[in-house]
Length: 266
Length: 221
Image (cartoon, rainbow over all chains, first blue to last red):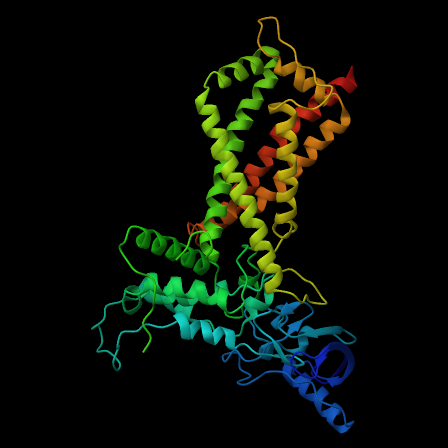
């Protein structure tokens, strides 16, 4: 398709006026969409048409629109972020679609992510996991002097891979069990790998697993849907690491070597 | 931290009990293969196995506990997961999940029923119309009991269905247990996946061959 051609698409969008209200699918036409439109820009075009027609625009989350903030969130044809590998919805472009395509748009669906409006869900359950267990409680001060805290290159790379998570929640949305294991596993692994986080690793994994249950997330069945849907390529090896950290902490606690009852937060 | 109520703790119990059952299934298959050595083969094997006495009973009790733990936790976890994900997508498209991974609870429950039936059949020998005799050396005739049973197509079919369930269950379950126990990483995970599929295929062909070949042998007569 050349840059001058445009396409018309059919959108089947989940509309819901507010939390705990009944929702339904509505069909809209997306007209004169160019291949250069991003998915969210396409929604902007549709919304402008809706506003001109005096209708309520489709509510959707977005912020940076450059694939780094983790705000955009919609399930496109059954796949969070639309299914282009390592791509957030805002970075998915309409050149991936063709004229006449029908596109289903749904919000993240999970008990832990209640729908606020249309495609917007409340993802603060992920923030609660971080508040409960995603930190180190020692004072790390300002930026340390070069080489004052020694971290090997493989460890630094591993921690950075885990820290790439932007917290969008696609892993939870993709999981048949609505589990947050990939999100939690990445954070637990990142901190357990670094000297600042190693000390509290047993307490952290204990608190994280409890927090996931408390915030309504499910259990892991190793479907690996999360890894496939993650726009940042977070791997399920971090879930294996969290499992390992959990079993280690449980064993240490059973022999009386650690007390995992509380993670200090100040 | 609690082994039997924390999410990962229970999954670890699932993994360990699953591994125990896989090891049992390996040993059971090796034993069953003696049937291809004829009546003398499997009757000798059965007699020697039962001569182990207390060891057999210890194994039975341990396996019973493992099966029950695996079963109870799996039902618990499945119900929790259903509750965590009450609203489904209108378009259900899986990226990595497989039929085997999504049907674990159903293949598992089918296997539980199969295990009950199999124990009633060849262990407790309580089903009506069974051939329960002794061979020429005065040993219990396992060979006659098994071949007679599998000459009935319905019984042979029931066993094949059970083994297909086992194949599906383990083609996801084997790699899953290593991931759950934290013994996995990028490089090992595909190896576990392939290994699990090979192992479950061996089980399917090995176990499945017994009823199928006995039935076909009869049909060929």
